[in-house]
Amino acid sequence: MSDTHANTPLIELQGVTKVYGRGAAAMQALRGVDLRIDAGEFVAVMGPSGSGKSTCLNILGCLDTPTAGTYRFGGVEVGGLSRNQRAELRRHYLGFVFQGFNLLNRTTALENVELPLLYRGIHLAERHRLAREALTAVGLAEWATHTPGELSGGQQQRVAIARAIVTAPDVLFADEPTGNLDSARSREIMELLTRFNRERGLTIVMVTHEADMAAFASRSVRFVDGRVAADTRSTEAA
Amino acid sequence: MVWNALLLALREIRRNVLRSCLTILGIVIGVAAVIVMVTLGGGDTAQVTAKIASLGTNLLMVRPGQRMGFGQMSTAAQFDLADAEAVEREIRSVLAISPASTAPTTAVFGNRNWSTSVTGIDNRYFGVRNWTLASGREFTDSELRAGSSVCIVGATVRKELFGAQDPLDNKLRLEKLSCTVIGLLQAKGQSTMGSDQDDLVLMPLRAFQRRIAGNQDIGLIQVSVRDGASTEQVKQDIEDLLRTRRHIAPSEDDDFQVLDMKEITQMLAGTTQVLTALLGAVAAVSLLVGGIGIMNIMLVSVTERTREIGIRLAIGALEREVLMQFLVEAVVLASFGGLTGIVLALAASVVLADLMSIPFVFNPGIVVLAFLFSAIVGVVFGFFPARTAARLDPIEALRHE
Ligand SMILES: Nc1ncnc2c1ncn2[C@@H]1O[C@H](COP(=O)(O)OP(=O)(O)O)[C@@H](O)[C@H]1O
Ligand SMILES: [Mg+2]
Image (cartoon, rainbow over all chains, first blue to last red; front, side, top):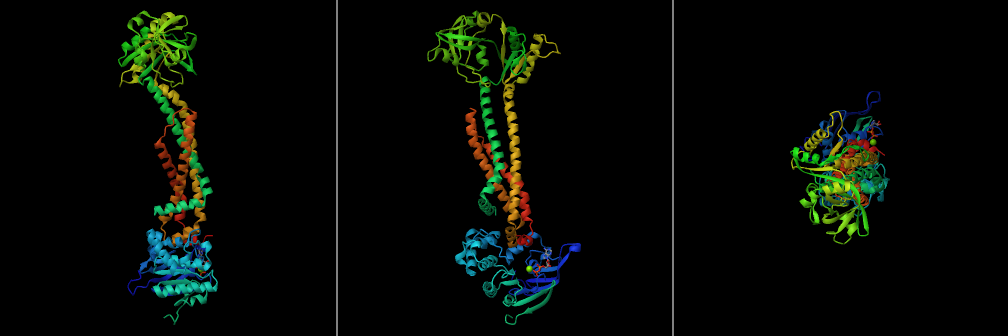
């Protein structure tokens, strides 16, 4: 999908709103978001807590659908897709990294990285090869047989990144990937993401509330109160 | 996909060995109960059937008197030879009849004596009862006509009185009557009722009537029915005929009984059927409870693994893939219960069959059926938890802790 026509952006939100709950308890998390992200961008989504960053990221990641407005991914209207179709979309084109790492406990790093390949129906030998490659890329080749419990937070997040990139997705979505890490570990993670963005042309959309981390990105989108308040491209990356 | 789900299921079960064992207990008991029941019941039936076959399947037994309940017979006039001959003559589908009369007696040979029974018969008895001689000969016409003092002994009588000695041409004493042994019956073993069929002495009917009973009575008419003819019909015909001959008014009940082997089998099977129904109920309840146990544990498991499910869904697992994973786990769990139940049941059946001295008849059909049934219990009771897992919202599930 990355080879779509140059005029078609990879990601395009138009007037997207999201309302949680109904009636008096209704909570408007997004109030009309317009956003366009092209292939190869590294976007940091910033903003105060409760401003709708995660909500927006979940919609972009096809984990959720907008209440109103349109979301096109590679020109395809996601709002019209079924739950299973969105799962297929995630499986083939998207990767996720979460604040809480979200690895399967009691399962080795290698098996965690293999998981998305399993759902793609890739055979054992090929799964092993690709997963080892991904673990090597995040610098954890020697930790393949360790379970998450035996790894540090930084290492766990790197396993999660390996799991996200092992399928060579078009976009990597990361929701506060450094939220649980100290600054040295956070820096390592950001360097890793930057490298994947530069070397593999991986599109990254990352939520963070730390300006230090956002500085690694080529573009920064600021959310306030469910709306995009600012959208700036760093001169260095441009 | 199923293969992976299977590996996952095995790993998950291994992680919670104790819990898994407790979960499948209900299924183990249910499956074991069914198999033990059917295996022992099958052994029992095989035994009964074999013994009835040894009697001859087309056999009817006509006896005077009616069963009053619990082994009591009402007294009624005995038959006579004319009744027996009438049955043979007037009912078309009757192949052969054998009139007989029996009395208890003590047989003596040398210094040994043995309590047994003596039955007066003619040679038709051997055909109707499907019985052959091990040695010696049947009665001659002149012996039958004259009521000679000759006899044929069963294997038990022979063993008790003669030991290893050849009984032929020896004289044994029945009460005050001395008679010559001219034949030895083939051994038949225990009857369906558990009595020893070989414990008897046969003599010409006329000799029995004159010298032992002192009357012309016939206590039992055995009737063999032609192949292909309806036993039911013959039974009905005999009843009609005897009612007329015995002048029984339409308002009165029969004062005699016509039993066929099917009825005798059913009488015996009756007790087994009650037991079967009881065990069947136990099995059904166990399987139901077992199924609910599995559903319960699977729901617990889904809750415990909500985060894992969220991760799988976020990564792109389809609903049916998650459904399959949990369904396979439930089925594997239930099947383990089934297998354990099968192994326990077969072991128990071998031991019990031995204790009850009935043959152990391995029934592959019920083993396969029980296994399939346990798997189906897994599918049925695993479906709801699996669907719950598959329908989780990935975002909610990931936030779960
Ligand atoms: N599932 C939900 N149900 C109800 N309200 C929600 C839900 N998810 C988020 N919200 C609300 O929507 C708003 C935006 O949330 P979120 O996107 O998580 O903000 P951020 O990630 O920027 O902190 C918040 O006020 C939050 O309470
Ligand atoms: Mg958030």
